[in-house]
Length: 310
Image (spheres, rainbow, N blue to C red):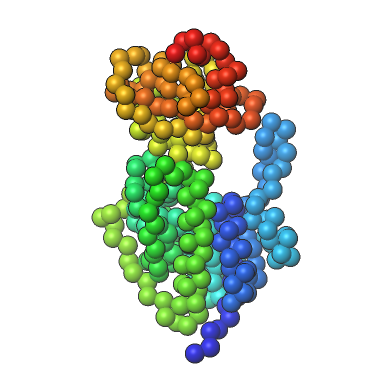
């Protein structure tokens, strides 16, 4: 049977969505005829308008692009589509948009729904120490990630993996899954399956305040925070009066009786800090305020007082 070519709209914003949009364009099986992304927002100390990654890709590929403040205003354009694909768009679709495209709207979500419904599924999976995650493509309904599942793929989380590596990996796997679903929709062979509400968990957006590290917490919990919050919003801590962003860390298990937050060792291996329940967190890669990220060993070399206190 010949595969009908669908007119696809794509709604997404961050780098993870870019990887999926690029895969749709490279497959060249269906036509991406409209791209929606969030408006540019002021960023950084200079409050300059920052470009949304999906916008950059859409412009480079000369795709029709809209950046509405309210997606409800683009209803007429959605009605020209066969299907709207949503990937980390950053705004919930109003009811008026859900069935504006002929086949409705589908979402690629970076979890095995109904586990981790919400804006930060990858971060919450890492925070909870999940060893398995995956991707779900579902038909969007009026709820928060509650629509029927069209396809899922499971992925093992590697030891020590952080969000910076896991999310792009899920994006690539999810793109393949999404392409299969779009083909099934085109052929009328999609088989939606209702989610099991008994298994639902929530993954709300993470704030910068939540990323602050409390040295009274166990080292394993702190390590998971570092992995989950890289690259956004970045775990941060104060070590002997110095504010640091923590890019990489590892939980250690030597016993100690020191007060949480005490420097236990500082050298080429990193910076060992006493954590809760007599555990130790080894900082491996840090970023002092106003500086570039560096190894903890290089950071310690410029701070002889850290060696003296260890």
